[in-house]
Length: 442
Ligand code: JFZ
Image (cartoon, rainbow, N blue to C red; front, side, top):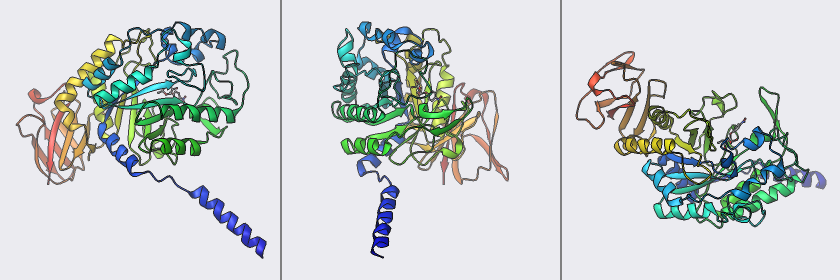
């Protein structure tokens, strides 16, 4: 009798710990609110890989052995790196935050770390902490800073069992998983102690430890110890937002959900997040300007200004942010084509940012022709097809007072019937990139 009672208590207690859900602090909830309103950020992929001009996966893609790859830091010397210039570029583009790779899959730490010598201060002729400089520049300019942090590591022997990538890299040894987890915790502690307030940690690489049959993912092979890692982060900096590019539904302890190269719920890449895994957290879409994250000298597929702006507007139409990427060159400069794109986006944002910042998802869900955002009693309808005169908003039944062109004192001719709302946009009023219509609700 006594024994059954004790075991019952044990069972109840253990279930209690399992069921213990993450409760975000007040600071964290405020940070989420800020994030949701920010709408536009700069993603930066920069590392010793940038020198090869073949993207951040070059170690895996070219199967570069450990000892060969280790030569890269020895001549990494970004003499043109100017953190304040990067921050200014982001700010002029209308961006509110920066997310930079602190350590990518190649395992090289772009910051001063005491728990590995494989870092920018110890192994490069440059010898300075680039993140520190960026953190200071961000603080001065009132831009928030996030750190990308790779869970997967092609260089650290303790990343063992290895995942499904980097398997052909020669020179990897077999270490201990628990030591790897301890290493990550120590580095995250450094990142959240030595750089002031950090707005968020952007994890990536979870999927490396999933079984893969060439078509779809199977089950996870390891324990990432997210419970401990997430707890550590929130204890060090409660406001720090945690996101994880795992492409599954949010895990307890996370504060935002990201969508890689896809709008929320559109799994066009095939390995992205499926519609059923879209959660309730603030969202972020991340995308490249050309087709590469890390600097790629052969990639000329730069998206047009129109594509980039429409992508941002569509993201906002889902209530999501857009985190737009640049891959700085090895000297620390950003390629001119991408600087130009950001400059143009900034111009657009200065004129039309009111229809993006601080808005939430509007009543018309985004499609190829349009998107909508909403702020209080105002709906901003964004029309993308300048060849079209008549726009039809199916089932639009939100009572409104007035419909006019944004920033122009001109009413829009419209008609409501049982099918929805029809708008007529004269040719002279159509914009090649985005014709914005303002609907004032009742
Ligand atoms: C990941 C990184 O691998 C990439 O280098 C970049 O940092 C991007 C933002 O995030 O991209 C992925 C993520 C998942 C897969 C492939 C690339 N996947 O599941 O095959």
